[in-house]
Length: 312
Ligand SMILES: CC(C)(COP(=O)(O)OP(=O)(O)OC[C@H]1O[C@@H](n2cnc3c(N)ncnc32)[C@H](O)[C@@H]1OP(=O)(O)O)[C@@H](O)C(=O)NCCC(=O)NCCS
Image (cartoon, rainbow, N blue to C red):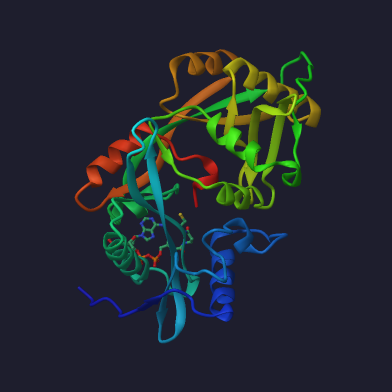
């Protein structure tokens, strides 16, 4: 077997390094011209001032590969027990350097960093299962996608697009606590939530009763999840679907996909099923256990959910 090339692996340490990284990510991971900087889609992990989660592999000084390793905390709903995991994203090797084992070398290195940070699993999102399988990942958790098609009974519930400027911290707290309550989910500060909501093409819809938010949903996130409702909260499944119908009619869209945790309470699932034209089950993500509590982390992810805004 050919010995692996020695790569220098480090965080980018100048603005120029970050610019080269972002250009490589854009050509590798987007196939059209973006109307914003690639890094704006990942404000918490491609920040040019804070590069600790961004890992670059250099060969003779030239950037060949990149991946983020973002430590996050899974929190249990009632016991408040926590498990540290690492999210992986923005995975790319420069087109001139692919097929030479560079990503596999970078992943070996990231696994060591993750272990030194006591992270109990690595999690990522990708449709390249065969590639990640060679790196030790397997399917983890479940999600259901419900197709909601515009019906022929126009009705407005009053849900409307909200500007982030009008959303208070109290609103953000209400939004986080009105999501379906799952055994485990990722902890997210209000500041992180606000930053994630500023990702281009992330559309926030809100319905209020008086001042209080009673229903909300998010459609899209940068180039990702167009036409997909990937995070939401409401008082009932029927009301949420009524809100989706209201948006379909207001915006004259034919269909939206409602993404939901695979282990949602049965009464929500049966309502969604009765009002959707189709539903399909999928793995939530790909994961790899690490460390002494890797099995526990995988089990927690299977019983919980990572919402769209948290994925990278
Ligand atoms: C996918 C990508 C990151 C791989 O990087 P790379 O440096 O060429 O990967 P490596 O050479 O380290 O390959 C690692 C292993 O995966 C295998 N592999 C590589 N690309 C693969 C693919 N598309 N499908 C299946 N296996 C693949 C290799 O054969 C190798 O296996 P081996 O160790 O048994 O020989 C690179 O092709 C790329 O940047 N693609 C475009 C961006 C992208 O799709 N990123 C992933 C988004 S989730």
